[in-house]
Image 1 (cartoon, rainbow, N blue to C red):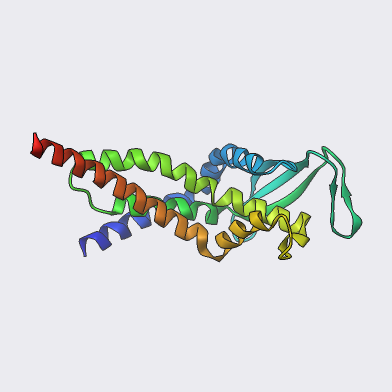
Image 2: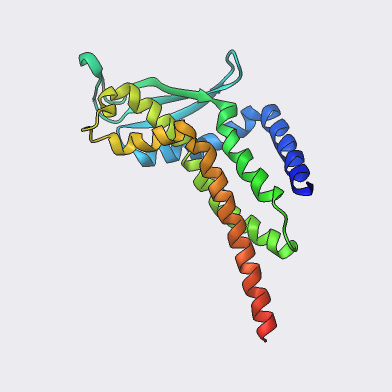
Length: 201
C-alpha cells in the first residue's frame, strides 16, 4: 500500500511537470535526439522543432538529404534539400522518461547509499531509454514515408523498421520499465555486495 501511494505521488508530480514544461524539456532534449537520429542513418540529417498544434505541442523533424533520394512514384529529393519528414506528439515523447523515473524513485530503498547507486546507474540507463524511443520512432516514421517498400518482407531496411514497429506496439513503454528494473537491481546488488564484504571482514 505504501509503495503504491508513493508511486502515485511521484507519477502525479512528474506528469504535472511534464504537461507544464513540455516545450522547454523537449527543446532541451532535441539536440540529443538529433544526434541519435543522425548516428542511426546516413541518408539525411535531422533538425527538430516544437510547434503548438491542436491537441498539444508536436515534435516536427525536418530532414536535409545528404544525397539525392529517390521517392516513391519516381519523385526525387535533391541532395541538401530540406523537407518535413516526421512528427510525433511532444507529450508522448516524455512518457518513457516519466515511466522510468516513477519506477526508479517509487521503488523503496534500504538506505541512502543504495539510492545513490541507483541514481548513478539510472544516469547511464536513462540516455539509452531516450535514444531508443523518440529518435527511433521518428526514423521509422520518416523511412516509412521515404521508403514504403521497406515494409516488404524482402526489404533491406526491414531490420531498421522492426524496432520501429516494436516501439509503436508498446516497446517505448516497456523499454523504460525494463531499464528501471535493471537500474534498481544494479543498485541493490552493489549494496548487498558491500554488506557481505563488511560481514566477512
